[in-house]
Length: 596
Image (cartoon, rainbow, N blue to C red; front, top):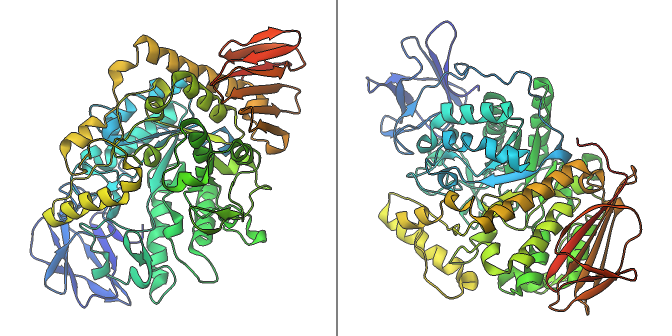
């Protein structure tokens, strides 16, 4: 990086800070007397010949305020403490032959480092890589790991965006995890937050015009991507993306809630980020991707540049989740009020966006644009994720809300869809642990405000039951994965179901080809059934029957030589299949391909 504390090969450390709002800037190394940085335009810089990796340092603004470095690579004592000098080239990587995997082969496994294992560390995650490899996923997706206040947080309150959280194992721990994942043949996706910073320890505004009052987000003032001084702000966040790609060998970034990124300049920040990120990936000789979360249903996010889009590689497909969950559970709270018909499942699978310009009762306006022409590999589909589980006060997982047969039907729809599937930690064995919202803010007034804000924000989703205070350590502990369940019979059977379906998806081109044009979906609202057929130029074919009603449903038996099937055993007589209520069955037809 150009900015921050950079150890030089010849010895000493170069300090450089972009701080146009600061009059004077100095650095204290290991608590010593302050050393003044020299102004160079909007930057301040200093070469400190006696500084070295491992030293602590703090910046002194205007001879008064002592602050962490905004470009700090490590914050070992928290968001208010001193930064640590880190030598970026000191880690001994072993993944020189790793070039990444194609996006269409991604099968995501989203996890939270703090609750995924008892250790709650990067090394703890590394200890489960063999388990994940055996499950068949191809990429682990880490919820945000940038330094946040305290030891417990989802990660979206990060404020030191270049510093992997110290409680998780810091820079060395994250590098060990990525290196081990690549050795196991797994890509690593990192969730990053470029729409806001957390409320505690956020000192950026003291250095430069990082924020603007022209726009508002649910988290406060928006980041200044298009106003005066925004060139340096854009550079800061682009540097952050390139930092994870380059110094940490991250394979893809999942960008949180990009609808909170406001930029009305001629060259949108997301398009500039995409160009810089892909250029750097090409220089490194690797496949690397940008994936967005957006609730705008705006096809421009993933449209090619020549069509006026930002050309991001993919985006989360929330409406796949909404349409299936509403049909299975009958839930109509909040945004789920817009869903509930099987025709919406059909549209979510065949086209992508369900609301593509039509009227949304929940939003009380016409909403969205058509994604019909976008390839399926530009969408990440799921039946659970961190947000959707925690959208109730009880943090109930889908397996706790519906029958086991219904759950299998949802899993079949996910893994037989043409989209890139995402699994949330523990769902593969129907973990019973909730996933709750948790924080550990040090400021008492902020902690109270966060707890009360969460209570109000999710009142529409809360339902009956106890409210779990985000600040309580018990809330965090209750969210830890229950690994003792993995080998219990019912949970072991569900894990085998996931493993077998993932294997089929990877073995059969008709399931793994991401071809929407070779996907057909038929539904019957009165009969409450869905028929999904996937094809492939190789001749292989998959047919999935889903019965959402409580009564048996009859279907014509599909033609062809059946190679295998999975699901609830149907009754077959006289060319008719009878599928039991609230269940599904998948048929696969030859020719059978070799495993990829």
